[in-house]
Amino acid sequence: MDAFSAGTLSRALDRLHSTIYFAPESNEMFSRLGVEDPRIQYFASRSAPMGAVNAKVVAATFYNFSPDVIAESIPAAWEIATPAEVTRVRYEIVDAVVSRILGDELVRSPQFARSAATVRRIAEAIPNADGRALYAGHAELNWPQTPHAQLWHAITLLREYRGDGHICALVAHGLSGLEALITHIATGTGFEPEFGRKLRGWSRAQWDETVDALRARSLLDDDGQLTPAGSELRTKIEDMTDDLAYAPWRTASDDDVQEMVALGEAIGAAVRNANAIPANVFGPRYGQHR
Image (spheres, rainbow, N blue to C red):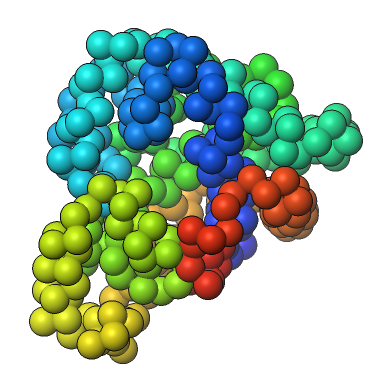
C-alpha cells in the first residue's frame, strides 16, 4: 500500500472517530461531570491527554480554530474537571456510542475482533512521537478494554499522528490555521462554509479578510473557489501529509489492507444508517481523500 492509499483508508476509518462529537451521549455524560458547554467539551476532551495545557497550546495543536474562542474554554475547563476526569468520561462515551452505532451483530463478530486487532497493530507501529504533540498525549493513555473502544482508540492514534503531520505540512507551505480551513472548505471535502466558520469560531470580518488575502495570493478566485495554483498547493499539502503519516502503514500486508478496507466500508454503512454524522454541515465531496 502506498502513501496515497493509506491516506484514503485513513479517511474511511476516521468516520468512526468523528461520531462521538455529534452523539447525544457525549453532551449528556460530560454535563453530568459539570462540563456543559459543547465547545468546552470538545476542546477539553481532545486536549486532555496532553494534561492541563493552556489555550495557546490547544490553539497550536488544533490549528484552525480561533485562538480567541479557545481561550474562552481553556484553561477554564480544568477548573471544572481535571484532564484525567475528562479523559475517563470521554472513553465511557466512546464505549457507549461506538457500540450503539456499529451494532451488536458487528461488534460481537469474530471478524470485527480480528479487524480491530489489525488496526491496533498498525497504530502500535507508529515509530515515535517526534514533533507530534497531540498524538504523543494520546499515545500515553492506557488501551481500553473492549474491542470496539480499542478500535476507536487505534483510529484516534493514527488520526492525531496524521493531523500533527498535516499541521507541519500547512506551516511548511505557508498557510495559517484560518487559511488552511478556508482552502480546505473550497475543496468540497470539508465543512459547508458558514458552518465551518461558526464551528471554528471565526468572525465574519476575519473570514472575509482572509478570503481577500487568499485571492491576493491567487489561491482563490472571485467566487471563492480554488484557482489552479490553489489546487496545486492543496495537492502538495495532502501529498506531504500522506508521506508524513505513512510510516505505520508500511507494516500492513495485502491481507491487512483488504481487511481494513472492508472494515472502513462497514463503518461507513453503520454511520450512515445511524445518521451519526449530520449530512447538511459538510461539503459535496465530504469523505473523499482529495
